[in-house]
Every structure is written in C-alpha cells, then in structure tokens.
Length: 404
Image (cartoon, rainbow, N blue to C red):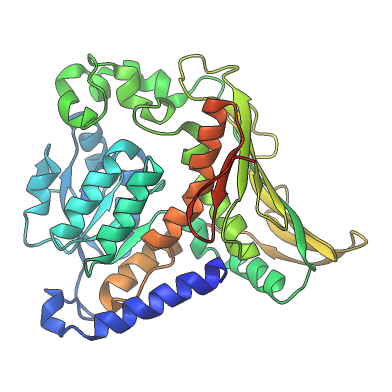
C-alpha cells in the first residue's frame, strides 16, 4: 500500500468513526455562517503571519499567549485589531470557552506538549511545521490526536498548492514515465542570519521580556541566552536546523508527487561554513534512497541564486520548477517543453483549508499522520549527519532497519 492509499484509508476510517458520534459529542460544531474564534500560541514570526491570514479570512483572534512579551507586542501591531486577552502561560488561553481553535507557532521543542494540551482542551489546531522535534514525539502526537475528535492541520502549506497537485496528477497518469530521480532544493541569501542579528534588540529579547523557564520547557536548563531565544531554529536543544525547518516542505512535495512511502536509507553531509553562531549546519545535503528512485535534498542559507524548487525526472520526461519564470515546466524525453503552469502562493489556501475543515469536520490537506510521515526523512538525515553513518528505515512496517 503506497502513501496515498494509506492516507486515504485512514481518512475513510476516521470519517466513518466520526459519524458514529452525535453532533453534541463534538461540543460546539460550527455552522456555515459562524465566525471562527482563534487563539494564537507563539505569535512570533510565522505565528503572527498565520494569525493575520486567518483574520483576513474572517476568523476572530480572541487571545494570544507567548513567553516573550516583546514578540507578542510585535504581533499586536501586525493584526488589524488589537487583541484584548494576552497570556504568558498558554494554558490560560486554552482554558477559555470562547475559543474554537488555536494557531501554534512555538519553537519546535514545545510543539509536542502544546498540541496535545490543545486537543485535550477541545481545540482544533493549526500547528506550524515541523510537527515534532523527534521521531518519538511525532508518533506520540499522531496516536493521541487520533484519539480525539479535533481537526489538526500541520503547516506544510505546499500540500495545498494547485501547481503541485497538477504535477502530481501528471505523474500519476504516467505523463513523464517512471520516476528515477527527484531533486529538491532551498537556497537563500542570509550572510548575517536575521535571527542571530536581532537577538540584540532589547525591545524583543531583553531578559525581562522573556519567561526563560517556560521557553526552555523540557529542554536542558541553561542561563538566559538572547541568541537562543531568537535563533532557536539553529540549536539542537530546540530544533533540527535547516533539515527539519525546510525539509518538511520539500520532502512532502517529493513524497506526494511520487506516491512514495518514504526512504529506506538516508545519508547526509554538510557543515557550518559561514553562520558560526549556529550549532546546526548552514549547508546540508541529504540523499534518500526510496527503493525505485532517489531524492537529493540540498539546503543552504548563504547564496540564493536558485532560491527553492523541485525537479522530477522520469524515463519519459521531466517536471521542473523554474523560478526565473515562476512556472512549473513539463519536458518530454528530448527536453522539449510540453506545457507550463504558474507557481502560486500556497499559504492562503492552506489556512483557508484549515478554517473550512473546522466547519465541515473533514480532514485537512496536511493531517498529523501525513505530516509525521513526510518529516521522517528529515529526522533520519539529521541522525546521519550527526553520526556520520547511513541510517536505515523500513517504511512499510514503519520501524528502524539495518543501516546497510
């Protein structure tokens, strides 16, 4: 059974189970004309953007919670209307009865507990990628979310991109033949990392503004460090660096379009060549052996010449994202252009899908099971990078295999 069939099977079973409950058992089911009421947990960089998007789509932002009062105030200035209710402890937000769902954009190491607390409180959730900081956390989140009746959308927004859906349909119909190679990449100019640089901003990262104990959560105890508070993505205690920050997006696209269950073997290499404040590598590349084809994923934050994109190479043609034209292009086996279509911004559609599913109770485009599966390759790549060894996995039985 491939990934698509497995997800469809799970969604059918979940839908059938949901029908067994009465409407009352769901608590407050939203009607077609009801305004959705949202709480923002971790309304920092990405979180503030997602809240603004939801607000533009008609959602009411009821409350905010953040361990950093500076970042929370920054979010207030971005929203169309100031949010009256703010908290340092997100549990106070979850205790509110006037919130239907939450948008979670905390640092990665807080995702696990925050999501589980949210669904236990009867809140639907949009949670930023990556779903989890570790494989074990992801497995636990899938099992416990499935035990509830809550809608959870993971922020792998490319899953809502119509341009990628068209590529998927062409490949599924045999339009480029059997795929033997996938290349995915994300290159950006960040010679002086923004997150490290802004750590000196006393309006955002003064120690008086940050509840450092709550920020750390279950991570190792350390004295306050403004760089870690701002640039947590690049420290192993809190995240997995570029591989898990960027990888989920493009591994999702690769697995979706190919219909793959995931990698069998992963090897990864790279280093820290320019951003010396980082613990994680700023130039890192993984090779994922998926049995009948290979994925090469390249990510670095030093040179943005090609920005980001994907290429799918079959025996009878190719589909490649050309950023210079803002297009997806399909080529035949002789490298002649067959057709092209525009690449759009998937983020608004992904948020709208979440809000729609809150009302319909249908599963969203990126549920936790799917997001956990596509994230696996990034976790294994980090394991390979840190150990210096190739890592094996059995994607059918979903367990570790010999490194081989």
